Amino acid sequence: MKRIVIAVALVVAAAVIFIVGRSLGAEPLRVSSTGARYAVTVVIDEPTTGRVSVEVLVTSGEPDSVAVSTVMPGMGHSTPEVIARQAGPGRFVAEGELFPMSGAWEVPIRLDGPAGEEVLVVDALITG
Image 1 (cartoon, rainbow, N blue to C red):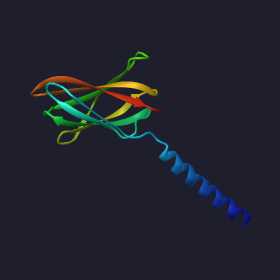
Image 2: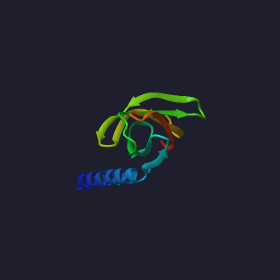
Image 3: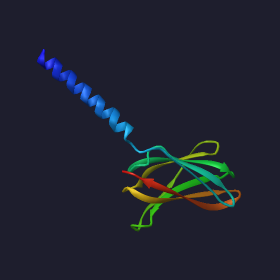
Image 4: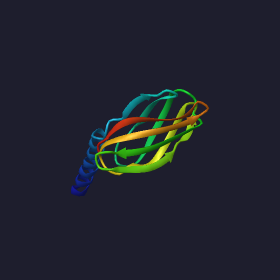
């Protein structure tokens, strides 16, 4: 009987840790930018370090390609450009190790299409 009580207590503790840990996670980031040729809304569901997914919703213009990179001006860090795959009309997704550390990052979005090339930049606070 004692083993059952301990096993149930461990399962409950694990469930509480899982639920609390998920609720303490970073809030989704949604930020927009408008240029001369294109306008975008950038969505990062989990703005944390490590492998992330950056969704670029093109709200004006029709680019053929979209690429995402990151720059941390305060520390002199940057990451290589990641080519986004088209996930639907006006929707592109870039996945990779874009934020190697927490802090204030700039996210340049390079769009290229019939209207020409343009780089739009949004700010992202990465919390860990």
